[in-house]
Image (cartoon, rainbow, N blue to C red; front, side):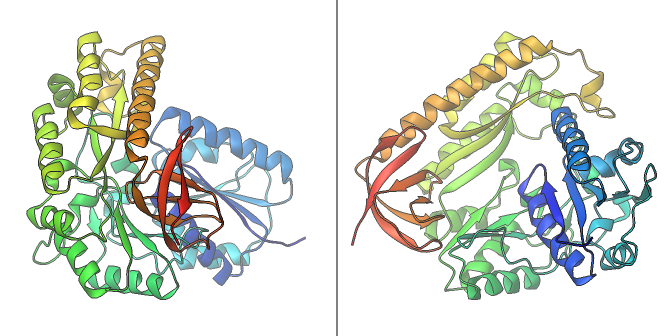
Length: 424
């Protein structure tokens, strides 16, 4: 029996982007009836969930070939190879290789209890070309990979061992891919990567992210909206700051990799910024772009973090004026320096994560309340819902075509989102 392939993605937007690329590669190679799980290694919980899902997929699909790839497969291929439910394990480079998919297409059978492992040394990888991707299942917002890998070695992070060293997609490819997506009718494009602000450092002439963003906007005048994924504030260059200030098509929503508000914890994390650096950066950007909305990643319960150190992270939210928080309970990853440091208990970690999430909930409520009465441009994601430039979700009182950008008057707050009516 043959049929459509099933792809499941865990983790970041880059993984989702690469799943879309794999979907096309598998189709072009004639692969049928396969199940592909694109795993995440950022936390132990993400790995646990992927293994749980693999077992469920095998129970529900006894006759289909099951392939596991992604960062968890790259960092621990043997773990997945030992699972009787898994037929094949692919590394992060191999999953985007057309030849691998052609091999899979020639072998549609399943050999129970065996695994074929094709996982190379990701540190030797120099490629970033994953081909054109026509969005991620929505007609409103598309993602463009501009960078992969990371040269930094934060003590808590396993991702460099899953993604390899930093490598940049050449500017011409990025500009042409954005043009392709604009022609396909997308109202918004998001530039994504593992360490976005490292873009260009490995290219001839060492261009910076600001140069790329400026050229993408200048050379695609019909692009209505451009967004950036997570930024490392210490690497933001002067050209990017100028574009943030002067270009309304660059959305005023910046997500920062902050991780902690305590200087000693930041040093133990091997981060390159201090608490004061983060506060100054946010104040400086807000001076230049008053409507900017900040998000941030913060880890709760990092090893050696005591109550006072955690309180510094809580107060950082207020001092930086953060709105959208991604809170990560610390998860020790085997092989990282942080896993060998004195650990907080699970109870302490989870309690601090809950407290940070409550702070985040309060900050979101304050931000949404401040938007009532404003006129906003809303990118429609469905007939009744969309997002503002600051990434607030909006529920409209009438239908509008997904993918269009409409003007709306914000009339109130409905739980976690805004209510609005369309301005004719």
